[in-house]
Image (cartoon, rainbow, N blue to C red):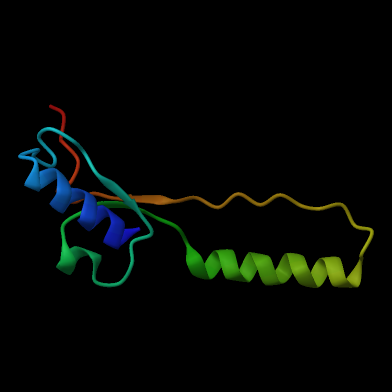
Length: 88
């Protein structure tokens, strides 16, 4: 996602399109070094919590195969940098 966003920004720039003035770019998953490579806004998810919930749900299903499937919703966070226009 990060490399695609960088590619999009570079391609837009080659056509004279300014990010974020003309087009906003938002990445998904705030991968390590994202701030250093390019200041791209990102949606980050709680990977450790996702893994923990997945293991817990899997263990529950193994112990009780007929148990109803549980839906778990975990929040995400917006990391604001410089690839999305700021409205006043």
